[in-house]
Length: 279
Length: 341
Image 1 (cartoon, helix red, strand yellow):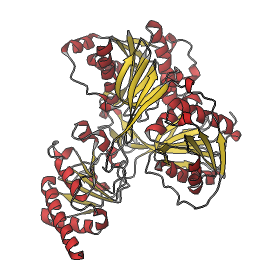
Image 2 (cartoon, chains in turn red, brown):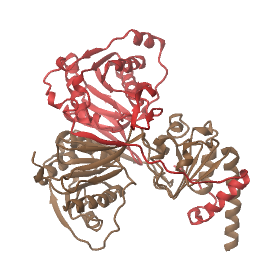
Image 3 (cartoon, helix red, strand yellow):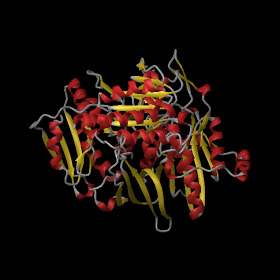
Image 4 (cartoon, helix red, strand yellow):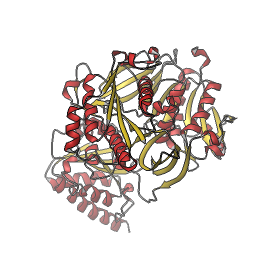
């Protein structure tokens, strides 16, 4: 039976977060903590695979105790089990230290039930790197399959998966041995509203929580801030442009002013007659 | 780790359809500045099948050395084969910095290489600098959805690595006939060691303009109210012969597909003219279009931050302004044509 682990993260909603203009730091209280939107698609895809092939979906996160809420959200989507690693020693981890800690947790989950497939979201909206998924794959010596926008076939018995990887101008069809790790694009699926059954289950659900001491063969020097090669040396607010000229008047006057500006660049409008060149 | 052994600024050269992709040339331009500051050389690492001849143009774009891995095993990009070649090259020649384009391929490769080396990796950098004496790379990037800029350092590991957004750095003007050193390498990897196979590559057939290559981009935001309202964006783009762009909200609402998205989690565009219609101008959008030649904002909210980032602004109802503009533009353009006949 297929055992899928989806790696997820609780993030501040960076779309609405407010900045403290004096300190250039984020006012975390201004933004609700949500399940990273990309990860919702990862969990949904895992649940769909479970429906197609049978099996179990486990979700894994690293975070402070309130991140349990993000796991509950995954249970609502249809995950079966939730695991969380939570410890001060993990704090301040960059992508390398994060992939190390999650790898240790996956090794422990594998002892409970061998893992066939790991699915991650494309990236998190607070880190914006997409580096943790491939990092986990390398550490577990699994092929990393990034930018996956379709899972065409999984064959557990014969041990292969066929997926589409999104490219800038199309996609490629890749066959990989399993186990493997996929990081998935948002377009891979739509996350439907949760069923009442799942919501009730989620409300009662308590994930398994492990501290560093619960994991095996952990080199503490590779955890958290200590295990992170990168450091943030400086943050600043992006320079605010001062704005340009407002075109005043009624609509006809405004558009005429704009038209005159555009006609100064008329060499750009060679496609006369407007053949559609929209992508 | 002794840092003295590590020298040289490297650029991973990405090849697509037999040609070097633009971002790799941009990174040679950026890398040249870093190399000059450090008094070290600039090198490209070129991996692929039948790619050796491409080295000549890399020298013209500033590379002093090009390491080439030219073999059928590298016909298509695959993480495991490319990673193996780059890791071996790294271990043999020990660069101080490696830059990659922040493309699907560049990000995939950089993430894998960083884990195996191991070293630090900064994603999606938009500003690069280097300390002359220490060689410390200062890679800066928008963070937290573009709300802040952050400078990331990697003090204790070499090489230092960063992926860099396309269309941000400038390629040098090629110097015809400029020569460099070509070093041909072979990687110790066999086909049977690689666990993935590329079965097929599907390119969208298109005479359509990609939004990151278009001269004119007409972008719309949530202010247009609905997918139906968004039609004015399609109409203007069609009239002007431009490509359609969109804010994140619009893509999330499903009015257009993700490849239209401009901004931090979409594409960076630098067209000659950029229209922002009904786009409020959240910072994550601005970072994706701020380097456009001429930015025109149309919004009914005079306080919309988009006006701060525009060259020209119109406060008004897009459903009145845009159709009028289309009509006037068509008339004027026909008039122009008649004048010149």
